Amino acid sequence: MPIKPENRSRYQDDWEQIRERILARAGHCCEQCRVANGDVIVRGIDKDAGTFQRFEGNGEVYAADDGRLLGHCKASEYCGNRWTKVVLTIAHLDHVPEHCDDENLKALCQRCHLAYDAQHHAETARQTRRARNAIGDLFATNED
Image (cartoon, rainbow, N blue to C red; front, side, top):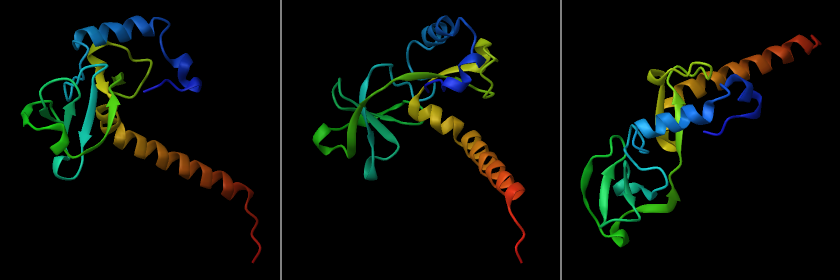
């Protein structure tokens, strides 16, 4: 995921080298679904939900959760909605950008990264809404 400007200072100065090291360790593939960095894929919908197909290749269909080969399908018979280029990101498993030990970092495609972070994002959003409401309460007038 792109680094938000307000969080840039939380990353080590050698973040680009750390990122490259983790990508190399992963073979430039998502460590969850095994899709390669830069691959052009389509994610399945409807009958093909939970899968993906590469633009290159012979119609192989892969499981979106772990990248195992499920079979083959003509692109014209595959149910997907749009082709997209995969960009690998580096996930902090503990959600702390300052913690850059290799065992705390994982190369993930954007889909797997968002899925991994879903609970953390939900909690952060809840806290943000709560803080916004609390600030509003400070300025509320009691006009009964």
